[in-house]
Image (cartoon, rainbow, N blue to C red; front, side, top):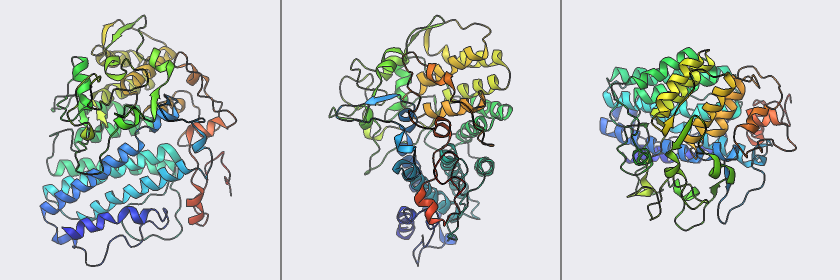
Length: 486
């Protein structure tokens, strides 16, 4: 097994060479051939890849809230222009995310290559993990850059790497999710724990992808597979139960997929960024969010998520408990808290969005009410709403439920496209900056990006110039950035 581990240890080293060369000489001579792998070997290899899944989840975790200006600088930390880091093809953020995602992608491709032709239960489960992981990586790439190179084998590549069309990338993601489903079905693998890739986890990632593509009827079907699952997911009955999703040893019935983050080294500590034990951390809630996020409205009062999200100290987000006193809930091992990727709320909120954009506001109200009845002391939603009213309700619920979990900027982008026709992800068109974004929250009027072409910045990051140089011009640039049409 040492040689298998040795193969995996070299993947990230090769990734720093850039997309065009990242697959050169991945595996050392003398490695164990795939036909000699036992089920025990595959299980160990699978666990190693799951650790890499945890790494990419945590690496991208805070970005959606940061770019949506959900954070103020934490104690001893500062930032001035939130969006400046992604406004240039030479920006370090655009490059680091690109190389990081492609580096982690190779773990999925290596795993898939290792179990090729292995139809044992262990082999099929590993295949499902590989396809699910790869789909997740490409989802994060396409929602940042648009069309990107598709790499599906751990083999050498030509120096010229071209971008696939954005529609082609979305199809590749859907195909990988089909393959993951097929592998799970072939081995008769059903939901056993939120720590494992399951048919329900695949369905929720599929639902999210379908929303971005505007395939609303299919999204409703995919979300219903989770809502009606024999696994019996249930909403929390109290704020204590809801808070338990984010602590070590969670037994929450809401969790659908949350890698358990149990490791002996390289701990992933989400709390360190927003709630560190030493009093110095990166992000605090903005004043407007701290005051208004969980405020009562004429139709909903007593949102008990507030108690488990913000404490009395307005600089801290206590959603990820640090194990010390003063937290809403005890966390026996904060360094090993699960990384919540999908939960039952995802199924209901995404289904409601699909129903609304698919033309049935009344169905959407009924669906979102099922969630909201479990989150408020008092709820009295009207039987009908205008599109604008429902959009405000949905955006508010998404923010309340997922604050601090890296969702906000991407929710804004998706709705800017799908409802407002701002820019099509499958057919680039220019448009005006959507003014509705600046009025979603009381007190938050700063989504405008001063001195920048807002429509490009909102929708796509630039393709890193370093990667374009390494591809000898094969990688084209996104509209609005230097080098476009060159």
